[in-house]
Length: 443
Image (cartoon, rainbow, N blue to C red; front, side, top):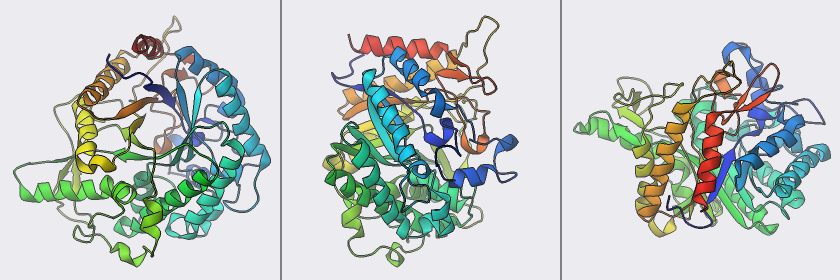
């Protein structure tokens, strides 16, 4: 397929979505525990209390990864499992779990890629203001140091934050994810405090010998509803600034985009001297998550400088997301064009799709549409590499079906089907396809 030697093939998961065991071995509550147990917040009242029970079944899940032949596994470490109150006392049992997990990966020849924060903020920190509180950034760096002290001798790849835009937008601005606030553009400080936490964590990780450090952002190409309409083009520009550039410019360029001109609050109100220097500490790779582009129109009303509209003319996933692999390739090329020499190597840290997969009477799960999706998107990555974009890894989302946040257990993103009553794992057709693709790519 033309992928370079050493290209890293992997799968990804997140702690709250698969681990379960939310009240075992000293784990404290997270914002997602609170949110999921609040009536009306999650579809059908689902919670991550048990999820896929990965906390107890991790050897079986690692064997599934070994069967795929993946080079790496991107997992997240649950902050409330390691530091139950978010700061202060460390829970040794929590670290022990990740110690076993990392050793199990290495025994199977799989490189661990650890994400420090995938949205499960310890509830006591949220009670003190969460990411609206600058102190949370410093607590995050302290937590990063604790984890690196224990696992740094074996974990080669570290991701500080996963998709901070989702925390800001869905968690604090629109209220559809934990912690469920509706601050709209007043949620902007949560972007800065997350990025400050990232920068401080980079230093903490470096001080403890970490070799490969990055941040994972969610990117969505911004399409004006009518490219000939200046108002729609302005809406797309505003969306791009808040969705994409806000979480990349400070890291790679040491400056925020001009959000004041786009209707946002002035970052000068919460950016302090030295913050941008900390945030722009050099990283070794940029994690890119891609699912779909977004079509923007000029707003008819409301506080936002854009209005999201439906993209027509493309097939959709089970969640109704448009399938546009060519936009993925355009995104990767666009990052190189925008950031030039400031852009480090890219790792695609998430890419996948949900479809309503079912186990057939013969025990198989035929998910041909997922295979078609992955094939087209992996080819888009390969084409971008051919065009000179430095992409060094691809992690499909996800290893297995799991708790899909506010949508509960309805959407299925996995290469492996999970029966949520029996917790039985059944590899889908896409599992075999990805296994064979990885093997072929190495030949």
